[in-house]
Image 1 (cartoon, rainbow, N blue to C red):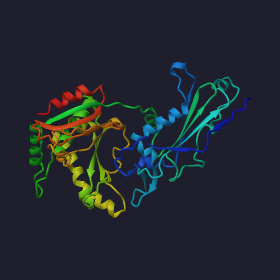
Image 2 (cartoon, rainbow, N blue to C red):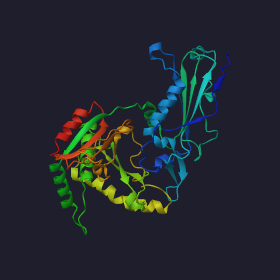
Image 3 (cartoon, rainbow, N blue to C red):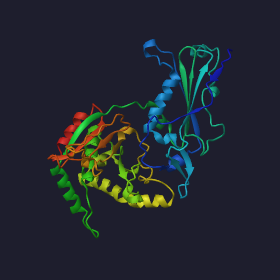
Length: 402
């Protein structure tokens, strides 16, 4: 029997997201199903035989490492770690990015895959993966580890070891199949007639209980774009339990006492978790209320977390955060930030147009400045939130807003 030697390039290196992810919360609560499997580890070995030159993977270990880094932008919880909580939940998943990352090792084997298939040896599985090194994995351990071993024939084996408490095998496969998605650029205008009508309906329905609830242009425009996008990507046969998650940026300055003149980052994020069916085909006023309710919770959540020594808002706990990028929409309003007041001596801008060089998740920037001052019939927005496949349906849904 031929001896097989596996040589590792060195100790594991930590792979982190290739760009800053968009976390919805600093911590995520684990479900009872998650907690019952914490500490249970599994390993999957994916064996890739040598391909024809045209379809062969060049430098498999480096290729997989780069892809892993890009995928973690969307699946950032997997780069976190489990920490003890001070409440009845016992443990939570920390997504702050501090000390996080996935251990990765590149290795080579002194044989071909054909040697093993011909019976000259057995795959040395113990040497083809990174192991937790005990009967179970602990809270301080990484949630997922990966080793790529290249064989002399050009084939390679990917060994993936993970904590079952954060993903079952179906979820792991979804992560490993994740592909880069290009989102189409869309220039959007939501008619003022639609915005004003929905605002009036919202106030009419939510005017009781000791005072009228305020409804902003942002609430209506965000809800409308969220609904149109959800209809476009899910269609008429929308699964009632399919997730629909909205994340929006929050200017924390008014809530945390930021000093005048401070120009560093002072934003956090809030999350709204619902289902695709409720968002796509629910009453638009109900969708607006989801956004409005999330905004109402921000001051209380910021204060509560400040007292706990935490930053940001809870983002609604962990509901809806373990979802793929197509189920999420990130929104950042540019209204009221002062860009429309810039004057270099010849007057203020007629329009402000944002552009994102890299879109790490479906995104939209509504309520662009100058929507009223330039005589527009509606509220301007730009979006990178649907693929070319869905862009026509998305525009058709937007055209129905009257």
